[in-house]
Length: 190
Image 1 (cartoon, rainbow, N blue to C red):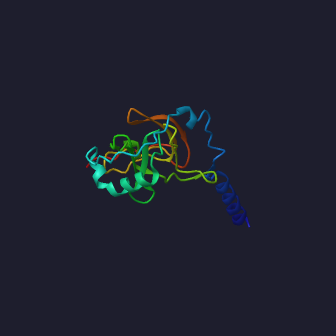
Image 2: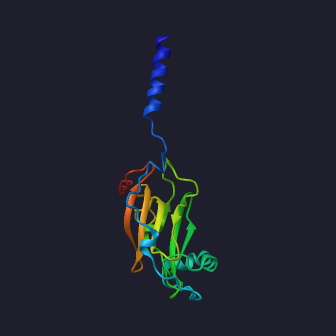
Image 3: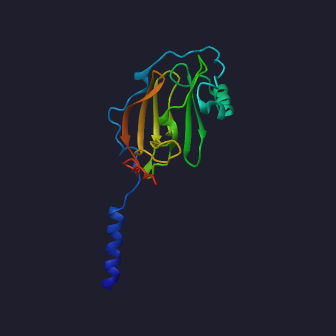
């Protein structure tokens, strides 16, 4: 009987201290940037042809870029089309097309982004990416790849807010969420 009581006590203690999924309400987004605070006018003209020489990856992903440009049109920051291509389970490669010039940007922050963040219970209908045609703000839920090209090394999991300015993404705010509060350590070279 003593062994049974001890086992029940151990099980109760394990359940009490085990990590659980954080609800959206527990992940406080105090002073979270708002889309309307980064407002821009939206370009309504026909998109320029994509310049596949503007970035080495543009030609490789030409079909995805063309299709998403045609389907989406201007969907980000007034004159840009934000696109994504899969690069493995829970992984995406993001690109931003300037519909005025046709130039393609592959920001390092979107190169190998993963949506695998562990214990986090997002609210119903929450998107991994939130962006609008009339705003320069991009909100991403996940982990950016912070490693060298070809290296899978990710930053802390959470909600990232970026501003698109001067053809670059600038981190505005980060709110931790999920099971990976720290970035992956650098891998040793052999």
